[in-house]
Image (cartoon, rainbow, N blue to C red):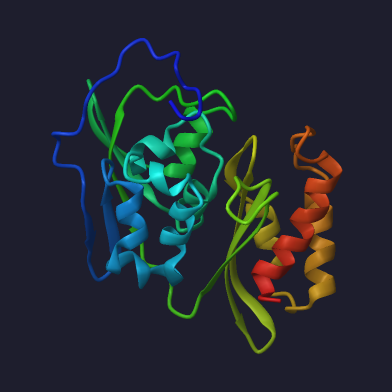
Length: 244
């Protein structure tokens, strides 16, 4: 309701379901859909998982007073699902277990957004989210998040999250995810493929991102122009991939 989502026809209380937990195994972290954002911020398991990117993302999801009310599942399926938390989960290849009339199924979060969501108008998914599972990042991969916003804690105009492994100045592995106001999180697989095997050179990375940015549709609104967002995509991607 804080984001003026007051047009729901039916509200269903899920608080009594046993879906509030953070469980860590040797290969992944599983998070129940009813886990509060405040729990994500404070969880010792998540603080030491994937460079602490999930607690950091949860802190940017909303004001501190609302984190005790908002849940992971609600945040991912909200009308404004364009922030760091969703972007971080997609960057980490998170999968989502959902349940509905036809039983339970597991899909990647990226696939759910691609099939059921539209930026700014919420989700058309009929099932409910039960659990999110995040695989542990590969060994030796560095994870970095870069953002621009009007204030440090404001909703980001643009976010770029990169997971990269650089060895002897060669990019051996890279994943790039971007999101921001009015944009659902998305990976950039063609850019990733182009960068793998190339020199970890700032000018080369910037040039490759610049070409890719011209094909990406971005909002043009009161927060920033499309040209500004594309220019910042190049800057933030270079920073997050190379750590500069």
